[in-house]
Length: 95
Ligand SMILES: [Zn+2]
Ligand SMILES: [Zn+2]
Image (cartoon, rainbow, N blue to C red; front, side, top):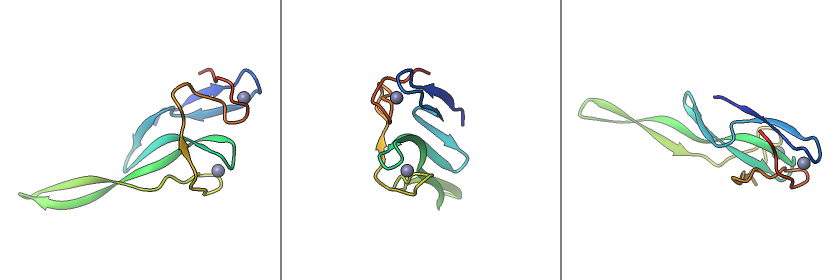
């Protein structure tokens, strides 16, 4: 997955994040905000699982999983809004 460095000019907070949704092998990640850590995190939101075989062809499926913060394991994540607010001060972050 490709991450970008986002930087808040107001408070100096910086984070490497994908800034959207991306796939890494058998997981799909999405950039979310953790209200506990006050941080932008890339959380796993879906996993690829081998599905049933149809006509001899295995059908893999994405199964949504509850997003959890990789730092505190909290589950209260919310998607990072498109205007990229800083999770610390609410300012707009540059990329
Ligand atoms: Zn900030
Ligand atoms: Zn957290």
